Image 1 (cartoon, rainbow, N blue to C red):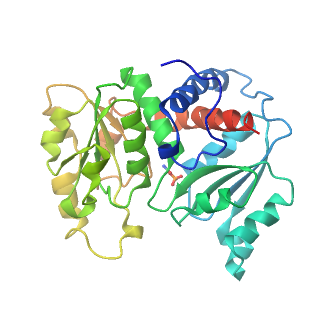
Image 2: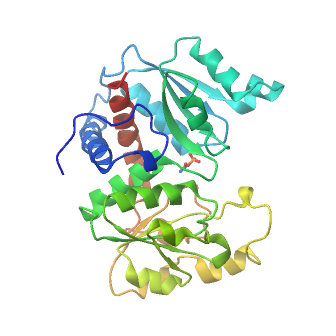
Image 3: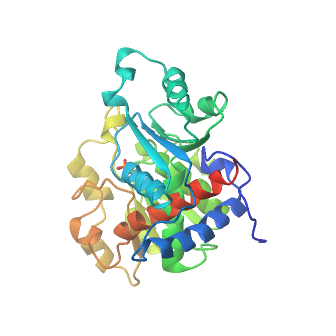
Length: 310
Ligand code: CP
């Protein structure tokens, strides 16, 4: 594939709207920024005079800190907004909140919002570049980009590589964005979890479906483990967490029984002892902290490339 010099879009609303060339350009740029953030002086002036607003209408630890660090490493001016301490609590609409922030001359908006599609709505109404930092159960594009970048760093080109996404696929924006991203990069993708936590027509996205953890572990090169999103579940999808762990949790006994090493990933936050045991999460096969490190470089790349589209 020929390398392109710029993105095909001025927003990153979802992996669905990025081309394979966009993704590869982001990875190439992230590779350069990874070198920068490992230097003694970690800062470059690329986004000097650019103001970025981080609008978080939902809780976050990793994504929020990672974006803020990425923006600061690029010398952007940064403003942070948290819904829990804002006038949203007094009944202000999303559009009014954002327009008030933009009136203060903000160039780029990074937003996490519980409503799927909130970013598409904003993109129709405001001129700033918008980056989706997670919209409900829909997409989390920068998580998928950092996941695929980390996979590629570990196992090389992803074409033909076998990736299983384990866990609560039904409520996971990480799963959907990973599926779109891995498909575009030519990986083979399988989802594995209880039937109640797997969307009925997910096979239409070109993924295999399994409910057998052992068979899926034997099949894959990479296991990306997701947590059970209890906060999004309005009914009971399985009898108990204990039973979930027994049938779908990854543990050392299972991994030691494989005749090959596999790469273990998790986007966080981890529920230790539920979907993954501590000795697996902290093992030499786990790249969970490398994912976090790569998140800063990947988000620097996304911000830098979008700023060039202004
Ligand atoms: N992986 C992820 O999105 O984590 P946070 O919810 O802490 O941002």
